[in-house]
Image: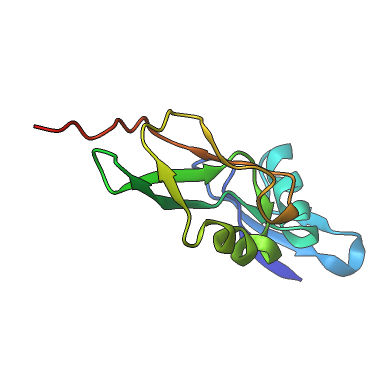
Amino acid sequence: MRELVCICCPKGCRLSVDEQADYAVTGNSCPRGAEYGREECRNPTRVVTSTVAVSGGIYPRCPVKTEAPVPKRQIFAVMAALDGLVVPAPVALGQKIVRNAAGTGVDIVATRNLGKKTER
C-alpha cells in the first residue's frame, strides 16, 4: 500500500494506492484523484523547470520549462540537455529552446519574452 497526497486540486486528499490490487485507489473525493494515484504509481511524471544562459540579452538567463510532463526517470537527462546551452537574444515566450529533449518527445520552451540588450 502506497500513501500519497493528491495534487489535482486544493483539497489535498490523502490517497491509498494498493499496488497489489491493480492500483486500486481509496481516499479520493473525485475521479481525478483516483487517476492521479494510479498514474503516480505506474508512471510518475513531472514538468521540468529551469533556466538557460542568454547571450546579448537584457538578462543573463531565461526561464524555461518542458511543454508537457516527462517521466521522472528522465529528469536528469532533460536537465543535461540544458547544461551549457546558450541561447541568443531576443527570446520569445513559447519559443522552442530544445526539441525532443533527451528523446522524451517533449520540447523545452521559453516562459518569458527576453529582449536584446541595447547599447548606450
